[in-house]
Image (cartoon, rainbow, N blue to C red; front, side, top):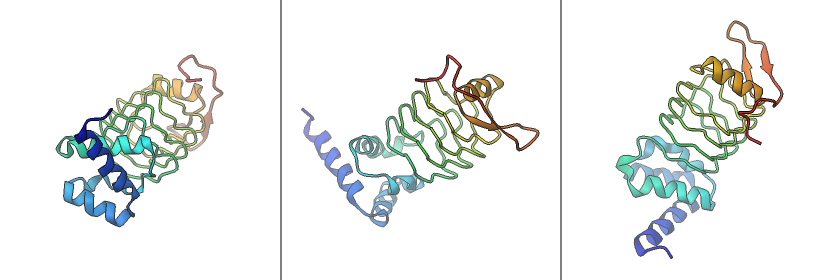
Length: 178
């Protein structure tokens, strides 16, 4: 059973996700969270209510977005700032994160199949158990050689740094999630 304040927060966040994008942006402005305008495009579901609850509970601590388990599939999130973001277990299938700032982000167990991360900054990112088959990393800015090798072995698409030829490998490496 949820306590009263958690129930109120749940209802507030569900109501937020029922609103149109313009109404959501007004709420985000009021809370000082307008920089997270991607919240205006989230679909209404339990995972995203929980995600919004983490933002609304302590808006002054939202500097490093907690998007654990969020349902972001198919969203266009170009140039978003998710530095130190926790995207573990997030559904990012077919999501577009071109030129996004993802340094220190945690993608453990996230589903990034067929996502587009071309031009994204990926320094110090965590990819264990992530599903990356068909995910386009472009040149993989900031990835280590070991990460490049592991991601390609799991079916990720990476451009050679010296050319624009795309390289994809089959899913054979033990670091791949099943």
